[in-house]
Length: 302
Image 1 (cartoon, rainbow, N blue to C red):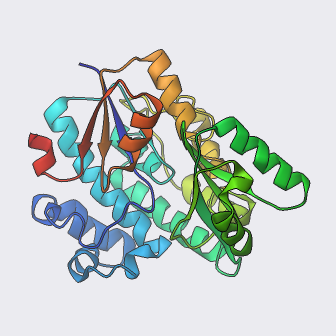
Image 2 (cartoon, rainbow, N blue to C red; image 1 turned 120 degrees about the horizontal axis):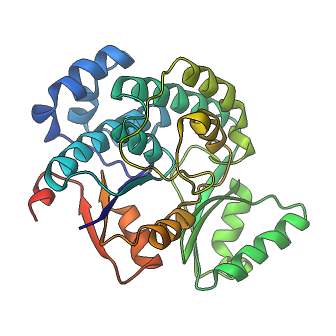
């Protein structure tokens, strides 16, 4: 049975998530994590501070480490996936599980990425919002109209057949939240993030990420990974530049889903990591498919 593994990005975190993994993976989550990043994931998990884990520089390594461990468990149980994808940060989990770079290198890259992204949005007064629509084409046309009127609205994520994520100034987002019809949308829901990620606002983070990636030696992955910036397969020659460009480009998750469905026709799609967000994206895009969620050790036995 062919299956696809999908890893979530920032926003999927919950206080105390992954606590059950501390005993199972002490080397990865305690010893190596502390040594690599200089702070204790175990303490963060045990404190369960929801404000702390909203910080990009904390949330990103945390989500990655937990998702990585659940990914190892999934492969132990089901064998290698036919392909892997990840949503923004989750792309790093997919690449690490495949073996393009190892766990320690991934941690260090993600730490630099999170710090640089946090710094770039610090005084931007920008944010992000999910746009729920029944007519994606109409919504995209409305965004074009707004941009032609010098009201900057960027599309950060193409998530599924009925949802995109937009970024803009907080003032614009508040207006659109109250006037969702301006986007031909059912609802516009502000997201709890620090700023406008996957837009030109975070372009200043790219040189720092590029520098961190230069320190890493890539290897051939053992599982195909489809990438966010173009929905094409990862390869060593272009991997680093595509990860750098992912910072300020739209995440084409919907395109990735459709391309994998067309090329692989998997039997099952599996969300791996906290929450269940990527499972919902597949369900809205390809409703006929079997969908599994692995976000706990117990869920592996269902």
